[in-house]
Length: 475
Image 1: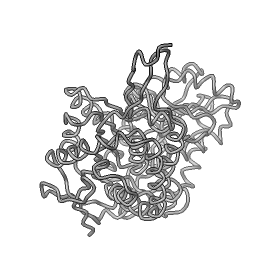
Image 2: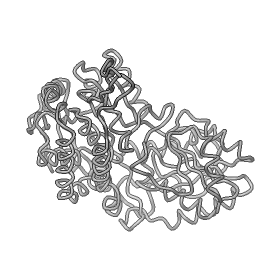
Image 3: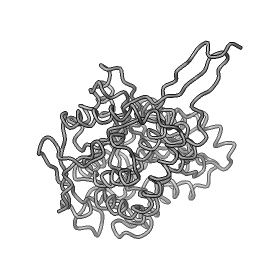
Image 4: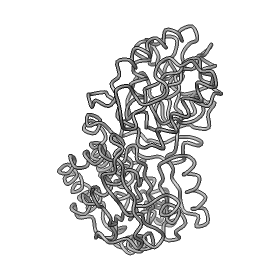
């Protein structure tokens, strides 16, 4: 059992105020392998005090100084990347092929993109006779999820540092070890004390205390829409800025002129990445009604070739917890009860697995857009195939959701794909299999959130205030 019972506050590892602990469970084995402390309001108070004290000096550092700091973090991260990857593998179950290909390297990718953006960013701009100053928003509370743990930490911390902010991070208590390694990396890289602070804990305790805290100027939250609403409400009394990246139920429109085999195969592979545990996963596939049976056959073939739990390239790992496994099982049962056609997969642990939270990769067809499995975020390897009669119907149903994070369009021509993309009410759209782009902003519409991360300057701007100095020049 690994004991990681301290918090990182004011440049040092310190004991928590309370002595409450939580076991960290490996989802592939269902066994506890580490133990962390759970903090509370008193720990948050200590971290915020350190961050406020550090803000006075760190917010006045030069762009050049912050560029050098990001470079130092990148160098240190690269030395520890294998340790970060192992922690992610153990705490949330990502198979090592995915850890090495994406989970661990994404931390470096975000720091690299932010570094380039910072070098080009103008913190002062003339505007007529006035002058605009872009200044750090202040002390930031960062709450991050378990599904892409380092990705979500780095895409907040890197731009916050670039902007000159100080911060308190509450990582997911389900996957906290990679975050604690990240704190070690920042310490070794020379981040000044108090600039970055980490307090482990649960949302109703540490997260609530952060959102309510008058000493925190901004909350940046990634997680479920339900929890995001709670953060926004708790932040309202102090009128702090709230940036949110929340849930999704992203539509994948397979147009009539698309290569059906390619579109269905890529759509499933994209959904199954990270065992379906991605907020932007293409979980609703819209298919021309006349091609639904053929599409279902293709999907069945893809699933039958998909490995679960063996660690091979492209294989699926477990979902993160018993709670998540049980939730997914309930939604699969709901799909069956509501009359969706189960093409492949279904209830129970994946074939060949005797332990671990391994969900059977599952495909439903003949789903209507008002069924529960078409409305609710499943957050697992479950695809719903929804038939449509006209392209206008597909677009209407794609937009008929409380979410609006991402969208996918598969077409025979890029021009056609672009036309449909313009009609989707989502923050992002992927055309013909295009992947994510770190230089593009990441975020959504409606209940998928109200902020933008990634995208270089877009990420930095989230952590800046704009000051207008009028009468700055006479002509």
